[in-house]
Image (cartoon, rainbow, N blue to C red; front, side, top):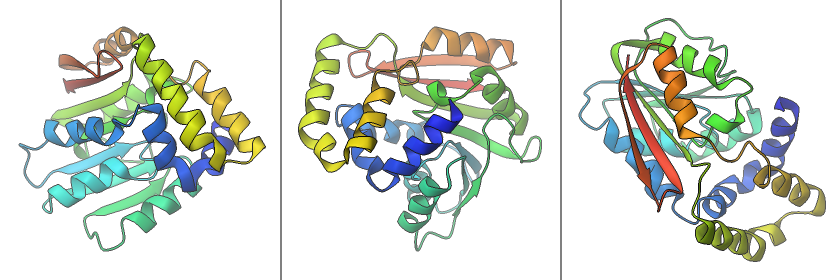
Length: 224
């Protein structure tokens, strides 16, 4: 799976933000903003954005909270290059290349760990969550945003129409095929109940879930 995703994300890195907009029915920025709100009460926080991609969440947090120090980590170097370009001028965000299931970061080193639209892409979501728990400080906060497995059928159809009309024509045939394979694969949608079970098993508490977009997406918060 990792090889396919690495090729896919490298292929779409320059257009990823447009793809993300299509796959989330145009609500991606609205939903991502909810992550920042979940940690807005913190001060001088160290924040880790796991599977940061092109840095949209990390950048949004960095702009809102000048006192925060944000680290974005992703396994794909092309996506990180886009993130760095988008982050020009921001002094409180940095990016590192790495695997979410084996974070090269110290234990208990972050006040908050966040991740958006990534859970279905991990080889082992339980291991990734275990690593998020490890690098969080005691009492630290975890915020996870993702697409729901049980999405509204009408919204799913509309998203598909938007993609084929506005996004697909921008790709050559090879890239288009990989994007469409991803959309129709098991990577794209996540069972929130399974994630909650992982969180409990890995030692998180105060677990809360909020569904958005008529159930199309969910945001989970938890405490170490």
